[in-house]
Picture: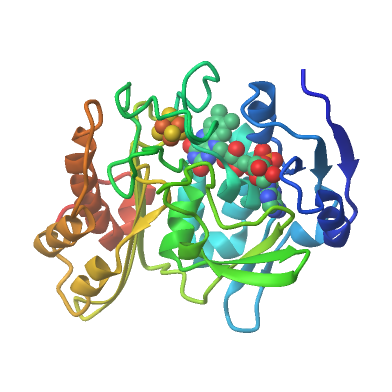
Length: 339
Ligand SMILES: Cc1cc2nc3c(=O)[nH]c(=O)nc-3n(C[C@H](O)[C@H](O)[C@H](O)COP(=O)(O)OP(=O)(O)OC[C@H]3O[C@@H](n4cnc5c(N)ncnc54)[C@H](O)[C@@H]3O)c2cc1C
Ligand code: SF4
């Protein structure tokens, strides 16, 4: 049993003061991840700072620039079913609803989703070496059972993947993250939030100790006409992605004018390669062009004993999901898209 104190913070300033920039003091929001981490002794806390009373971070609001702001404490369920998200950002809604279970989505918050930790089996087994849990101890997955692990962006220190669905859509949609900390407010582009493992796999993202995520902003364009989220997994529900793809297009006169493709389940962060998106601009939306984009995205991919299949799986998933994005109606009706 780890003893810790529990504080209910009334506002962001109090939370920052209670966190005191100290790694041993931790935020609890929905508790769906941090409770497990504490119970299994994967993480330790001297103090848990409960930020749930922050009603100002519990909403979805429209911004003057045409975009929207998702409250950090808004639940995944409230976000996915919000009328503005369903209508203007259906890619995000679909990605959130592909994750976890209805019960978990009712508790899980948006900021908590960004901050959730990997599902690497060895990370959760405190009797095995793991550089992410215990820096310098080694990586059990590289020569172990690595079916769910990374094929892109990994290092010799860690091949874990970031498990979120929501974040794959946020990456594709060019979200930005609003943060407050002891040094004031700051904003991080989504692409700069999560980190690759490199030499420091124990650091998942660029949020500093003592900082609080207050909200996530989305730009005006939510690609409501041509979008799709595809999640491939071992079970059809309540399972993390082996590979997932978020795709969004703007298309005029059968020509792509804007393209977004982000992958989940393949790397330590949502994987987005601008070169592939630029390749598709001014091109016809067809499977030949999508296959070339997939090759660009998977360039340099490396598999291990149990997960090499993910490279081909990811390529096929990209092509299929790009085709599905041309027919978003077929996703709602269950009809099979064809090209
Ligand atoms: C069985 C199961 C299945 C799941 N399946 C999926 C899935 O398929 N896809 C998917 O995407 N997710 C899945 N999840 C993960 C789930 O979405 C996350 O656990 C959840 O989003 C975390 O949110 P929370 O509010 O509960 O976070 P908490 O558990 O409260 O906190 C998680 C982390 O976030 C930090 N944190 C929380 N809020 C803030 C803030 N405002 N500022 C800074 N730090 C903060 C906490 O300190 C902690 O480190 C699953 C979870 C479970 C338990
Ligand atoms: S892949 Fe990363 S999280 Fe998994 S055992 Fe290796 S170091 Fe730990």
